[in-house]
Image (cartoon, rainbow, N blue to C red):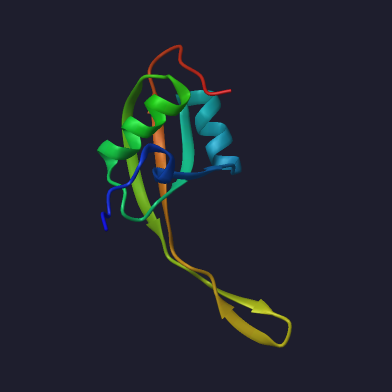
Length: 94
């Protein structure tokens, strides 16, 4: 069984925060939650193939999971990998 990630396995969901909205408007950055096994090259290829845009930079970070209160008990949110993708001048993701 292969551990290879396909293009559609790399990107899990888009990321929407106030800070990313500002980065998008002023510096053309977009945020995604990505698979933990994906590297920057795979993330760049996935974004370019899915959205048909030119990516100039990819920054990644792993967000540590946090404890959350659920009723009377505590649970733990899993860690997630995030990617900030900078697009070429004039490029947009709708």
